[in-house]
Image (cartoon, rainbow, N blue to C red; front, top):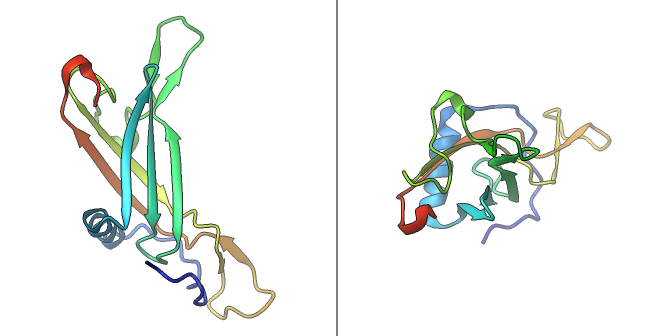
Length: 143
């Protein structure tokens, strides 16, 4: 379990690949979880747990399916994210979802390195990383 009583690290907008690698290690250890859910043909993703940079807890929830007005069905909101062709979550061919996540821990990280009282703060440490989820097709096309 991570302690959230230490002083927060300074905010730094970064998407260095090492944070994606760190997120993968957190996924393997169970300190970070990611899942795709489908309910009434609407797919969503939830990523929650420890941020790979600041280790504060966060939760990222997003819809992957855009529901239209009924003309033409629905469109996958995940298609094209990260420049990759993705299958429809819950489709008969399984699914692959690429999520670009930015820390949203809600902890006030100082924007300047001094961390002085009264300095500007951000509600997250600024790190961005990528999570890729893939799952096999199952009977009925549901993951």
